[in-house]
Image 1 (tube, one colour):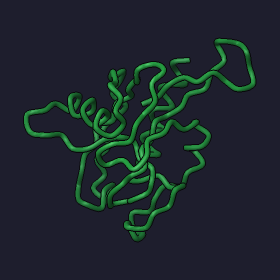
Image 2 (cartoon, rainbow, N blue to C red):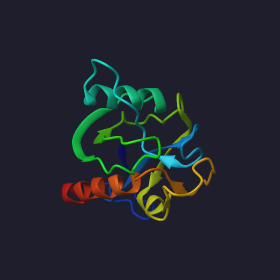
Image 3 (cartoon, rainbow, N blue to C red):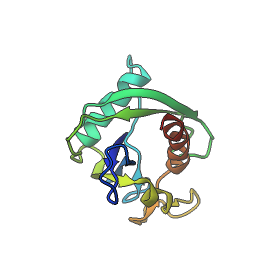
Length: 154
C-alpha cells in the first residue's frame, strides 16, 4: 500500500515522494519486526479478496488494488512452512491514516528511504526476538519490486 506525500523541500505540487504502509508484527514469527500487511487466503476467497480483507483487518483502511507486483514462492521465505505470496500494489483512501488491528501492533506509513535502510530479517536467527528496525520475511524484496513499477509510473 502506498501513497504520495508532498516533498518537504518544495512548494511544487508535482514534487512528491512515495510512502509505503508497513505494520509492526504483534505475533511470531518476526514479532516486533515490520512487514507488509497481509495474511492467508480463506476458503472460497480469491487472492484479491484476501488482500482487501487483510488490509482492512490489519490497518482499518479500505484499499483499491492497482497492480499485481509479483508472486513470491521460495520454499524458505517463511519459517512456518512453504507459503506463496501474491503481492499487490494497493491505494488507500486519501487523507485517512492507518489504525493497527488484528495481527498488527502498529501501522504506519514510511518514507522509501527509511524502508531501504531497514535490514532484512535472517530466516536463521531467533525468530522470537524483536527488533524495531528489521523487515520481516522477504518483504523488502517485494517492496523493491513495487518501487520499480512506481519509478516507471512517474
